[in-house]
Image (cartoon, rainbow, N blue to C red; front, side, top):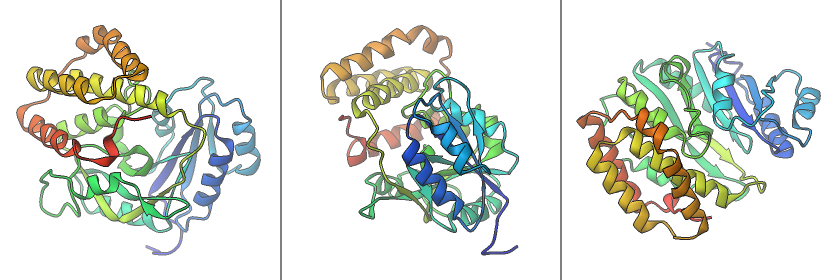
Length: 302
């Protein structure tokens, strides 16, 4: 295999909504990658001319226009078009470093039960590590021999390469969660199927955070989805304890109140689909929960 030229093992999937400038920058970065991956963009009903700009400036990119804002489910739509063994997710304000997609494919090729590898994240334009990297690097979870790096209990969709078949077998991102911590449920279900997730220090993703974001709305979705995941998959007592801890530790303001109200309103569908994990997986979830309490990347502010 050519170690510096194109690599046809990975497709890059990007979702976007009303971030034309950021998306065009990201697509420019992806176009320059030596791997020359196929790129698929799901434009979730942007009204700022995003789709027209992509079609004009990047005609080689697969462009999906579902006509409504699908949130994380836009990735599911794109993965239906993927024919490569691996899919690299990318946000419209993140991009992969040259060589990382090739190395990720090598790591997955060599480890048949590894479903996903998550990269180190560098914050641009300053070039510092994202605070979440420390959490990934210091994951408390044990893994099997030969697992290249720390085992993870979840992943970051904007910085992860997944095995396409595993993503599909896991059901993709759940439409009920829409967006905001949506990875946790899929990651849990992948582990339940016997897959492993890992952090790979040698892979790098660059993140230049968009200014076009509503941090308070994201916090609402993050708290709501944390509660829903807890109620969907944690056994009764751990679920009650985690709910109580969230109630005590989130800042109590209008956003938190809205998050708990939305979570409570969703209880009927959550309880219908509740399927607690077995004890061995619950032990892993509990270990992650303990580790995250001191993580600077987990502060519910906005």
